[in-house]
Structure formats: C-alpha cells, structure tokens
Image 1: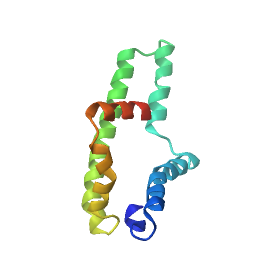
Image 2: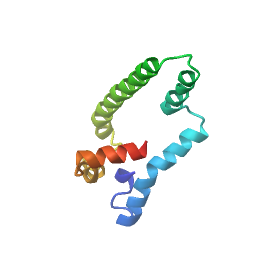
Image 3: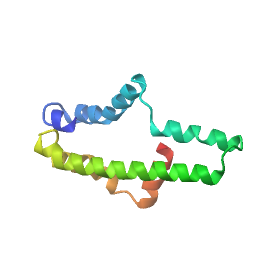
Image 4: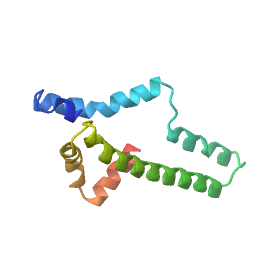
Length: 118
C-alpha cells in the first residue's frame, strides 16, 4: 500500500491506508472462511480439558505449530524481499519505513505488545 500511494496522497491519508491494510485483509480471510492456525490451536485445548489428551501433547502440538509458523514466515519473508522489488511489488525503502517505528522499542515493550496483540 505504501508503495502504491506514497507521494500520491497526503501523509495522513497514506498512514491511514497503510494502517488499515492488515485489517481489510483479515476481514477478507474471515469472510472467505479461510481457517487460521489459531483456530486449531485453541480447539486443541478441549481434549486436554476432557482428559482425552495430556498437557504435554498439547504443548508438543503448539510447539510444532509455532515452529512451522516461524519457518514458514522466514521462508515467505525471504521470498518476498527477493521477489517483491524485482517485480515492482514494493520498494525495499518501504519495508524500512514500515519496520522503523517498531524496531526502536525495547525488547520488553515489543514482548508486551506481542502478548497484548495475541
């Protein structure tokens, strides 16, 4: 979004559009009835509560899901950073503009924000 509208619209409008891009995408995911990984990891608690599975099995499942998400996220990021600029999807400076305000916080603040965000 920043690549498309940067320099076209005013700074406040550009910020609003960029800030709402994730939200619009999330609405499309929900309306499209696409399943999110959090749905499966939350439902996995039910067998533990019914004592049909152990907390260790639940921890193993959550660990596998987390590991898979991290590996998938890294692979996706590497592909996008490589392919995105080559095809003109976005500019590398746009990534720095998006990430810049977030990487200046302390580790504790980032962890707290991540926990609050779910």
